[in-house]
Length: 544
Ligand code: GLN
Image (cartoon, rainbow, N blue to C red):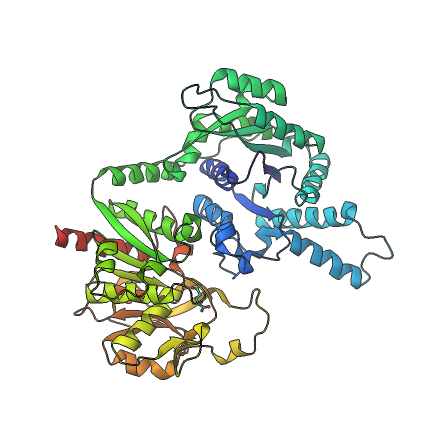
């Protein structure tokens, strides 16, 4: 087993996750099987309880683990399916160590960070590597070098490096090379020097330094970094800003990162896979077609793009497949509050928009605005896709405005006499918040002769979930009488999974209790997203 460990310096948000995902893709293209892991030094057991405002979206794995969005990048770039053991947090490590201590598992030892915590970290990394059948294990250490939180993890990988063969271990450090000003345009290497210095104080010497920069690094900047940081010239890699994140593997390749990694780890090229490069070319072509579509995403965290990262990606995958260019218009749900379908407010917010998407969410803020957006999409026959919370709100909207159940609401959001969205019995007993929603892959059974069947082309699918509340079966008949169809359910038929509007009443009105965005890949777009973007394209041609 060979290991590549990715650390980050200078500041967070430099795209370490995308760098690691890109390195994984580059090696996959050369025929290697990769297993990626992410270490998050926070004390939370998982990302499930974390506010998307702080960390971006919570990504959900097939087995239901709620993780950092970087694991989404790994799945999309490397086209792999990850699970619980691929994400390690400080919370997981310490609770395992403490649990073992309570059981007497340390036989009287004083339990310490070194060696007990570091051993726990090393064991977990090696176990994932060994169970994976992969050739290479890629480990990203979250946070910035110098943070107190990441110290035990950096110490653990330092020890691992000593224990493994020299040709089996490689450190990649991602830093920032800012420019002084647009006019002077001088690339400053000092932050990189300092961050490598901090790394070396911990006993770690990077083999490769990936420098985030506006433009390609100039030769003298590269030389300076190489000299001050004790790496070869060719090991200083420019990662200049890319218009499209999927282009990053190609840009890093042009910088010679693949050759350098292969040389250091003594790997030979096994195959040559061009699928990725072709996909990137397809994305470029679609942007250039001039077939521009605008989709409104009505959310609560709309100002923070990363809150809906996977949705944005899934839309992009579908757009490239269909050959159009989608602009996402982020609409703050509260701005639609108090609006009605006829008021000019919504008209101006949605003018020039060919599709409306209401994504997942929690809590009452912005809810009435989201419901107004759904009414707008329904009445004006604008293609609509609702996801999770968006599905629940579409059901509430139909109950209120079509079935005349004016008090209809979700019990998540307050008292109501008409709980069309309710807690099923099993959730009523749940008191603990973390990891207790209905999470991960569940089968969905699709009704014959429905739009959902057309979208998926089959009657049984597997999609990822993350929700606590469900459609209350008592109201189904009442809502279906008004032209809504619950076209997907779980096996027993009690849980509603997909709702759609009858085709004669709307060109495309679909909402899913599950999150199809988590399964979308740039080379394999998600069916509901393809169908939705396609409907938006048709809507656009009708408008012109
Ligand atoms: N808040 C809703 C629930 O818990 C929807 C969750 C979501 O959109 N992910 O069921």
